[in-house]
Length: 299
Image 1 (cartoon, rainbow, N blue to C red):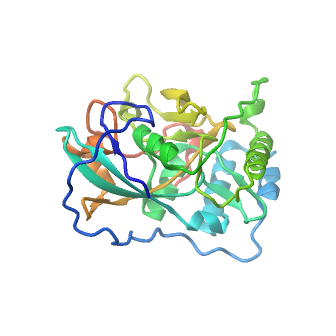
Image 2 (cartoon, helix red, strand yellow):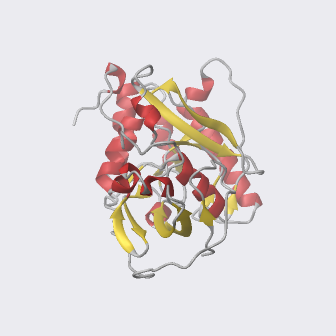
Image 3 (cartoon, helix red, strand yellow):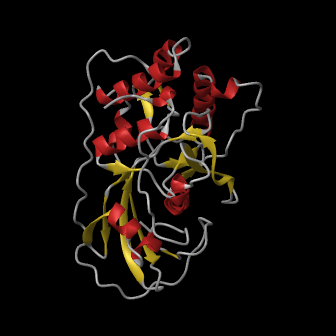
């Protein structure tokens, strides 16, 4: 994969610079495999699952989404991760070779032939990520993913009519629009793709005392590389609509050939800049249990 240097400061996915000499321990060391659950036989299709959600409560819907993950009901292509190999600058503007492993698309429920990309609360996403050995991306990682993805889709916003965009059936409609774009490009659904959803992200905004129990979202890049959605924690964490997506990043990364825990990097006062463009290291590296009863899923 082509290497580029990305600075700590810009939030644009097009930021780059000149490479420097690096001491790399190993270019070919493999990532720790993600803990994908085994797929249970006779799992429900993605469209059938969506229609089952039409008359259920929020809490039941979230529990059902988590259950589909636990029984391995997701497309096989999500098990084939994408590796990004790039040069990044730390807070002292020293360059490091960084390798990260990400899902090729946003999380889906269903089979290879019938699936739907699933919005969900950050609490469910956190449970899934913890089980996988993965984390949500930061804003900078979302930009890196968009920059590196070979397929960049064009965002397709739906006009807001009452609360229609929050309905699961609208998620399925948007999923069909994405499928049409991929088909028109003569590409395959399992390829590494970006630009078609807003990401749930890690950020210090999670700990904003003025907005407890909120979710931080970012992304949905236009063809010029600029996101439709700036990073924000405007939504409560039980709000979700068709535009939200969850893409996981392997918790193990490689920095100059050495395996590292991405959460340790994001907390480091110098190295956090490799994968985060906020002014300070992350104080909170995940979403804790919500206090709103609508998202109480238990253990």
